[in-house]
Figure 1 (tube, rainbow, N blue to C red):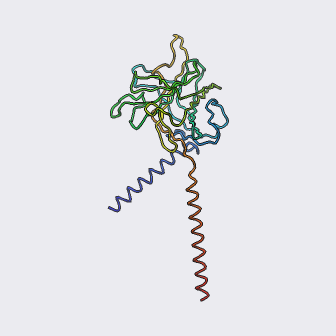
Figure 2 (figure 1 turned 120 degrees about the vertical axis):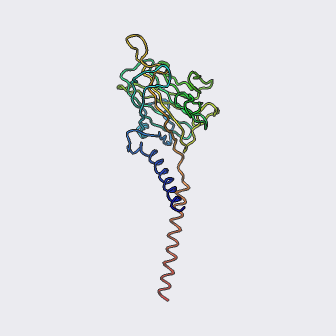
Figure 3 (figure 1 turned 135 degrees about the vertical axis):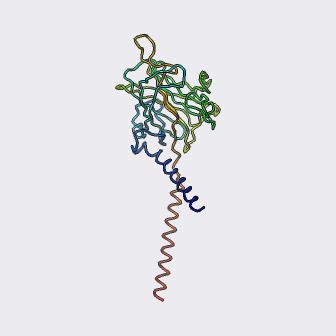
Length: 276
């Protein structure tokens, strides 16, 4: 029984270590591909309207692989974007997420999107479509398109159910430089519509997925990627850093103080005993 308990304890401890490493790895460059996006807490306002702001260089980049969408009936065999780098920041009120990915040309129909689960119900990353043992949605999708320059806040719960919300809480902007798109999405951490919008609680992990469209016109006049024809990722994780826990520093300081005081008392008693 004791051996089993020890083994169980080691598994729990290892799990905690892996969780910490998954958060720290992007910041320390320990892995080319990541499992989570860390949104650091900053003092000033988030750069919601500027994908090229200098503060983004302080945010660790996490890189995620992309592949052609194959679940929907209209598919493509190869997508332009092979991976996407993602950075996050928040100021305690607003969260900003920056996507960076390669695209040979700037086109009006270039587009990018973020997807989140809504609530506690597990959903497939393909628009929340029921698949296998995974129930359907709902999912919250933030969609940016170069042609409009705006972001649409949308919902879906399976293929063919994508709808635009009546209330639009997300903003964004894209900048194309030297063959790379930088697209920023910004929204309040929490909204008044938890049944439609993902809620970002600092310190908690939520699911996130990515989609990229290369809107180049082919010789036939058709778009290279449109609708379900796109580059996608599976579910990964997003976490906004919680505020600093100053109480832990206070407790540590008190503990050190008590230890020093106790040591002083013991030394005094030993000296008195030696004199006697």
